[in-house]
Each structure stands twice: as C-alpha cells, then as structure tokens.
Length: 327
Image: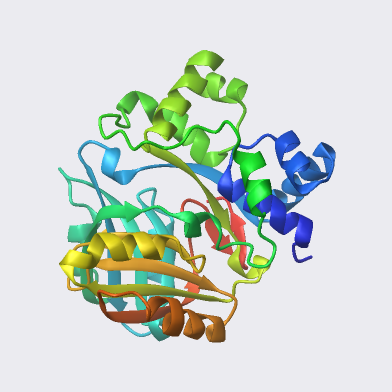
C-alpha cells in the first residue's frame, strides 16, 4: 500500500528531526502517539524507510570521500553494482546512463587507496573517474524532497523543532575510533534507544546521549533516511554534474541545497566541480526543474544529467524489489 498523507507527514517529520519522539510528531500532525508509532513500524517493516546515522566524511581523520563514475562493459553493470553494494565502504550505488555506467560513493582510507586502485583494473571496467568530496552543502531542500504536496507547514516545523540545537559546524570535533561501536549501532537503527546504545558501547546512557549531542550539533555526525523512492512516488532520479565558475561555486551550492528537488549537493574535484542528486515524480518534473530553478542560477555554465535506471544501495541499506532491505 502506498503511503498516504499521514504517512508522508510522518516521513517528512523524520527528515526534519530523525530522532523526534513519536509524541511530538503526533502532536504536530494531529494524530495519536500510538498511530505514529504503529505507522512508522509498518513503514519500516515494509521497507519504505530506515533511519540511520552517518559520519561526516570530512570529519574522519585519515579518510576521504569520493564519488566514482564507472563505465562498464555491456552486460556487466548489475554484477559489479551488486558486488560494490555488499562492501562496507560504499553507499548510493546506482546503475544509470542506459545501464552502461555505475555511480557510487566510497569512503577511502588515505593510507590504502582501496577501490581507487582496484576498480580501474577490473576486467568489466571500461572507464573510471573519481571525484573527491570537498564540501557538502546543507540546506532546506535536503529535508523537503520526500513529501511534495504533503509537507509540514511553517507552524508545524516550528513546533517539531522547538528546542532542537542548531548545528554550528565546529571543525574541531572529529569522529574518533572510540565512536565506532556507537556509529555502528546508529547505522543499523538511527532511532535506537539510549539504553540499547549504552549496551552496544559499554557507556552509560548519559554518556551516550552526551556524545551523540556533541557529534551532531558540531556537524560531525548527521541523521539520514534511506527511502524506497518508488514507494513514495519518486520515479525519476538523476545525478547532475555541474560546471560552475569558481567565483560562484559557494553561492551556487548554497542555492541548490535549498531546492526541494535535490536530496544532496556537494563540491567535488574533477572536470565538473559540483554534483547533486535530483529526486522528481517523473521526467516532466525533472525537465521543469532544470529549465526553471537551475536555469535561473547565475554562475552555472553547464549541467550534465545522468538518469539512474536502478538504485542498488542507499546510504547503508540495499534496495531489493524496490524496497529498503538489510545487507
């Protein structure tokens, strides 16, 4: 069953505040706490959504984050994409460009280049390019692309986020080795209780809560949603590769991050210097977005649009039969 209006509003609330108490979500959208809890568990069990935590790759000492574009021999893309999806160091594994190209994100240990050296030598790979993440742009669009037409209004947003600390991006706060058990638990379930997180780490509940607060308010860790796109009415997904004049890069990235059609925008290395992930209801909506909002931004010199035929893996969870599933 497709998510209805209440489901969509619950999902939007979780995008804005992934660990929001069910009681607060219920008060905001005008239903009971039991209704929110029951519907969330149904959406989770049905593979529509999973909440998870992710470490900011720019805050992990000795690590770097890359987007890989892999041109494949005919008939080999699915097998290679499946193999990449099973790895712990990959995310957002997709097949696009008519089935001839794989894109994925890879976390690379700077002391061991890993995929950056292995993939170009694979027999199924015809072309390969790697683009390092330099800066991730965060804006309103990142938490609004999921529920067009069912968004929480300004008053509901204010009520939902009351008392939630603002992110201040303290660059001195880093993800440490000691945080590994905590992050592993939060990747599996971003809404895990303090008690279960304490059991996973050996810390007290207070220590867990304090560490999560420190990491998230500093921007070192953020919470995200893995969503089954087609289940929520999103049927056209595309990677956009922008060429932007350097003097306009920061401003263009900030504007793109506020677009509700984009789930992600980042400055990267390579021939194109900014990439984004567009999520639209259909091809007509993507065309409208490109010819209106994108066309109106000064500094955009060109944009390459690569439609994705199939998503194999989201931020952490696999996509099987159009649903979010465990590894």
